[in-house]
Length: 76
Image (cartoon, rainbow, N blue to C red; front, side):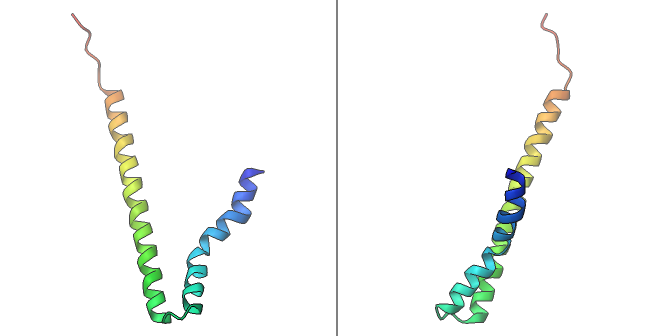
């Protein structure tokens, strides 16, 4: 049930947050070209953040796997 709610309600809502914010900004009187540039900048910053986060997680996973696979020396 939780997955159905996330898939059918939250996902479309999150996908349209940028459009909602842009419509609000235009309604408040901001120039539409300025609003489009700002939305592009926000989307680009979010995607760069996601890329950095996944890269960090990938490095952590690779290091963890490397350490796990190293042969262990027995203490004398």
